[in-house]
Length: 464
Image 1 (cartoon, rainbow, N blue to C red):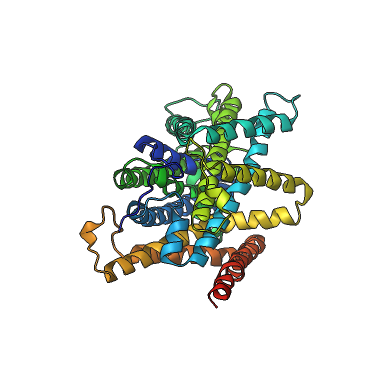
Image 2: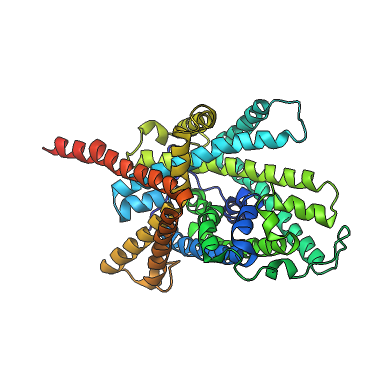
């Protein structure tokens, strides 16, 4: 029953190693959501409320990852959850999730270009932002165009910088928190800032408000599935990646939030550009702002790099399933779907322009779709695994033959689906996020409608 990607002139090649898969998935989660978004979460929910929200987010990530792991081992293709949804739920759902995920990442890639350009302004204030944007566009395009191996190796080092930065930050922060490192004229806070205003200073409501922000921070781990189609020995490397990634990501996030909350009063965290910079300043680390500026720049380039890769592979998969133009399924001699890469980059630049030209209309719609894209992806992954396992057992398959399988079935996929639906309900209750939810769900409905009109009706007409 296992499906593979055969190597040939028009097929992707398995060149990624275990270390690449691990760091790509880890790097996809540790990004601007942690370095910049953590301050907002702490300011809205308080220290303990934020830790609770991140624990729930980590649980949801784990549920989605183990479901994806079972599917990716049995069917390790580059389209990942798009191909799984097409086969185990239906082509309409595969069409919807493929295009929404592509749109989601392509939009983020465009935003990352301008964010990276703005960060360079700290060091080169006289150089126009667009010059840096253009430079980073050429850089990331070249990395993705050269070969899959070039992308994997580059992303390995991008992610490595982020991981090392977080580990060092946690270590230094804990030492300062307990007085092992003297701070600039400030006594060691221990746990005083964490418990100063009670367990949940903004109530349960504050936790609900930041939940979607927290979930967005964890999204990107599913890149592991997209990379599975180009990974050596997926039946061995995918389970290994899942076991190590989930635990380490949760530990990194929880410890980082713990240190931030201990060293910075939670009411100040929400208004800080980056709480990491403030903590390093409090401790008295020289050039703290420049250090974090470099780390955040690396995180942004990493997200852009991974986004281009994910988009081109999803578009390639859609083409293979005849849900996108056949041109997107063609590979060059290095095994890269260049036409898919060209179109992804073009859309990323177009979405970048809408942030200036149509900020109050088209850009808001695109951002809303992108916002719910990750959560609906996790829901579809869990539903695909549920449908696969039911069909597998119905066809006489044996659980012991699965090289990686979800334990506690069907509890795990059902819990994942339920939490995702609950998140959408929280979003609908919050008036500041409600419009984004409705626009995103509207786009999902439009995808299904288009698929029916473009493919289902056309097929019926052809058969008649």
